[in-house]
Image 1 (tube, rainbow, N blue to C red):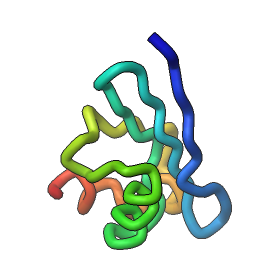
Image 2 (image 1 turned 120 degrees about the vertical axis):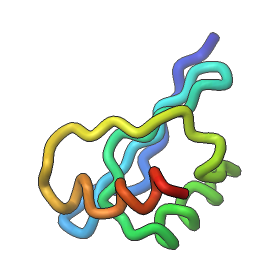
Image 3 (image 1 turned 180 degrees about the horizontal axis):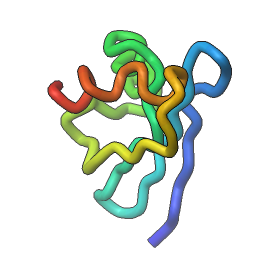
Image 4 (image 1 turned 45 degrees about the horizontal axis):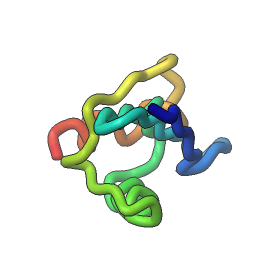
Length: 73
């Protein structure tokens, strides 16, 4: 199996990295708003429902800003 990485974006306005292997897709951080995150995932042919989980690296707003809403989705 191949381990894949895709940056949804990185900067002071938000950070998110998709890590995938097989059918497991984990989002590292989610500092973007819900709609922005959905749009960025769609560019990778992904939906929030396909995520296996979200890992938060630390509590800065640009890393956790959208985690709660995305997790509820």
